[in-house]
Every structure is written in structure tokens, then in C-alpha cells.
Image 1 (cartoon, rainbow, N blue to C red):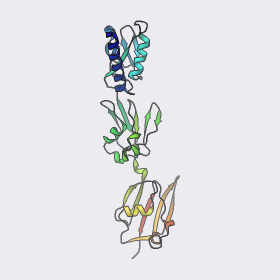
Image 2: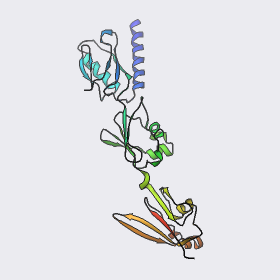
Image 3: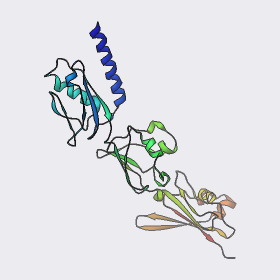
Image 4: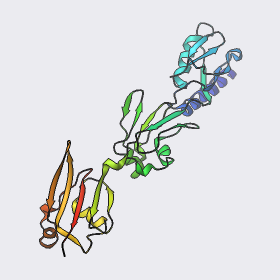
Length: 267
């Protein structure tokens, strides 16, 4: 009965360690506590060496880097069956030193961050200074040479936590500049500016968001400059007709990188 109670305690601790470990991947420099139930001489605290291995009594060198604590527990259970009858092994992470995240792409200054522990993408984005200059719609996370399907725009700007992911050591966060994701309004408007592109954005929308026409503006001579390959296409619009006669075909839907140029009239 006493053995059964001890076994239940060990099983409870095992599941607790699994819940804590989650998908964390062990890396070099991490501190691990390895416990073998009923065999204290095999229970040790170790550091993962630069070659990714740990050394255990009886088991010798065992590869740990690249595995989760649960996966390493299973591996050690297999290795120790030659020395212990029905071994029960738990692995917990005592210290994390290999938790580097790399940020690049031009939207924010490049840097290498060492996270103190488990962290999510949302938490990381909230802590990046100048994140407003990054194009989250084109951003992505690179892990083990593959792009992860993460909608960072929906996560950060709309608060969709369902799109959040846990980050892992050696993840690369690519954040391109949002300069290519803007529409630029210049000329005879009250507040010339770059406006973040969004689906369905039209000429009249950006002019109104730029404070409207100045008193010198010639609404009948608005020009759109649109990049098409290596060339610039010029599209002339008569917004005077749009505002007076409701000619909706003049209210052109814009594209990323468009320039809306409002010319001045001759008085």
C-alpha cells in the first residue's frame, strides 16, 4: 500500500512536470534535474554541454539538446532499463540559458533577445520598441528553416490571442518595414502623410484622413502614381465630379505603395 501511494505521488509529479514543460526545447547551457524514482544515486542535476549532451551515472553521455523534457524522460527511461527494473524518470528544467530569439527584417532595429523563460509571440511584440514601424501583415516567424503560419497583424492589432504561439530558442522573428505597406498623400491637402494600407481603401478615404483639400486644391486633377514592375503608372482622376455628381468610378480603390498627388489650381 505504501509503495502504491509513493507511485501515485511520482505519477502526479510526472504529470505536473509535463504540464510545466510544455513544448520547451532543451538547449545547451540549460540546467536539468533528472530524477529516477527509488534510485537516488542516479538522480542528478546536470548542465547541457556545448555538444548538446549530458552525462549521467550508468547511462553515460545522452543527447539532450533539441528534445523536450518529456522526450528526454522517455529516452532516459529506455537507456536505464539495462540498469533499473521498470525505471520511472522525470526531467525538469531548472535553469534556462539558451533562450535566444533573433529579430530582423528592417521594420525594427535588428537584435538578439535572451528571454528569461517561456514567452509567447504576443508578449514579445508588446515589448518591442518601434513595433509600429513594422509590417505585421508580412511578418513571420522562422523555426528550424520553416515559416510558421502566424497572423501577427490579427494577433497584435486585433488582440486575437488564438493566433498566439509559444516562442522557442533560436526562433527568428522577421519584421519588415511598413513603408511598403502605406499609401502616400501629398500636395494640396491639409495634412500630407503616409497612411497604412487596408483592404478597400479608396482615394476619397485617404484625402479625408489627410484633412481634406486645401483651398488651393484642384480636385479635378488628382493623380495616382502606381508602381507596376519597374515602371510607374499614372492614373488621372476627377474627384470634383465624384463630390458633385457622385461619379463613384472616380473613387479608385488603392494599392500598397500608391502615391495620391493633389495638384494646386491656378488662380
